[in-house]
Length: 117
Ligand code: HEM
Image (tube, rainbow, N blue to C red; front, side, top):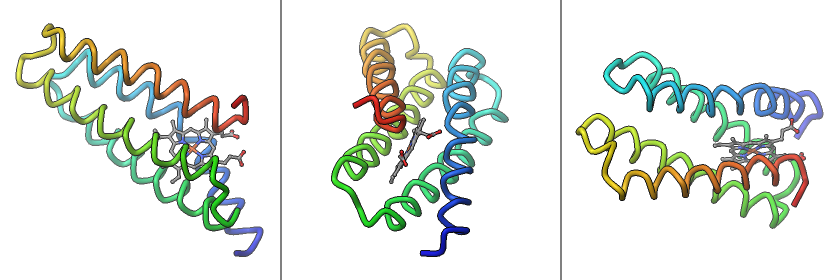
């Protein structure tokens, strides 16, 4: 892969992750509106495409393959939580547990991204 293309993936990944965190929290709080969940899904796409792009560019290091898999689980959790909020199940304990799992896993993914572990 050319350095230029790899750089595009690295820059779009580094520039987009914070939007996922912010847009998810805003979508969960204001769960009745439909705009932020739509933009959030666009950012999932940017993160997955740039993440897979980097994996190819770096020839699939095991640590980042694991990070990518956890990140996909994190995306699934966000969709499950937003679905539950919309159905009025936001106060159920199962939703709160999913939210706690999301918080732990997203911190894990971000720390793995920065090479903290
Ligand atoms: C919820 C989605 C995701 C979040 C919040 C996230 C977060 C991050 C962060 C914060 C970084 C460090 C960026 C920087 O250096 O400024 C990073 C790097 C990286 N991420 Fe992700 N990521 C996500 C999804 C993915 C996916 C789906 C993959 C792979 C399929 C992936 C693969 C990578 C790789 C390979 C790096 C490069 C690490 C390096 O060069 O040091 N990420 N990610």
